[in-house]
Length: 333
Image (cartoon, rainbow, N blue to C red):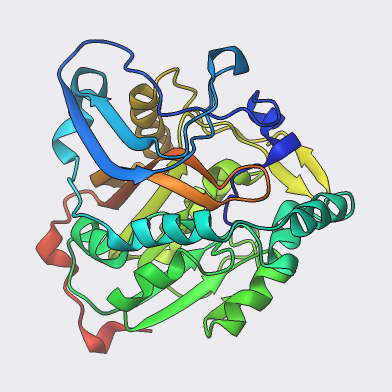
């Protein structure tokens, strides 16, 4: 299940009351920083307590400064991405055509019976955006081709930007409504939780985007991802940070029984904590490339756009170099 940005009352699950949004988080220190300026207007859903927030101006620029010192040994693996016209187009369209009051009200009414994911899929609401195809190509640094598995693919909105880099795409999704949308887009979809029901196949690349913080068993999921990835393949994972994990069981919002440790308090420290937590579960893998990206969600009648600060990384088995990931047709299964 692709993690959706919470709306309205759901924002309280992050400690943020209804309508509370802010511009990007302030710097936490005065150490040397990298300035990442995406130059795109966006409203920011914040992780900080409501007392620290203010309503963002619609034309506020999305801007993220990263502390090199707090990132430590993770810093040299950072990848600066190219400009992303698809991101700008997503934001323009979301601002021009937000979900209506009727659809917003219908969504909230149905959440009394269904999970957010099922309601999103049923009403075709809150599409998401992470990275465009050129950005994925720069981050992955691998030859085009091979087989992609996108785990918890949601409605396929994020998958479609990864798909052009591969020969075939397979998805998994536990939400019945999202699985229907994936199949309508033309993707093969297994309606399973691979942590519970592993696939009997391996893939050149396994992606898991904005799912780790929305599953009951993230450690079990990580182990399944590693098992599904070929020995010379890549794991691609993304998560908003700091982690504020919960999962849905029907209309209920619950605390996961398993915990993936990345509480921050700063985004940079949470990124380091996330990488270390993944290394404890998958010691044979190491992060080789990573970047910051805003995780965007279409707005509604209350806000035109929602965003969270995400870390996106590529993991490969230790000792495997980028040139070792060449794709050969005779090894695809």
